[in-house]
Image 1 (cartoon, rainbow, N blue to C red):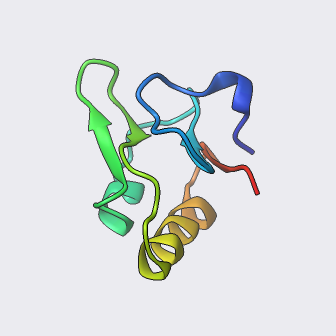
Image 2 (cartoon, rainbow, N blue to C red):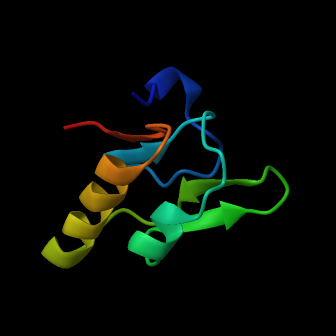
Length: 76
């Protein structure tokens, strides 16, 4: 389960975030490409933009549920 105290830099303010357990597998970026981006220097993902519509919200939830290391968190 992702931890708020371990959020990576670059996460857009809001409900979804990525923590430092990300293994750069690309699943979230493929599942919700408008919301997740890769930090090339740190070799992991972060939330570039919070979902702005129900379709993006659903994609972010799929990414959260499918993340192999549970590095994606959701604050309510």
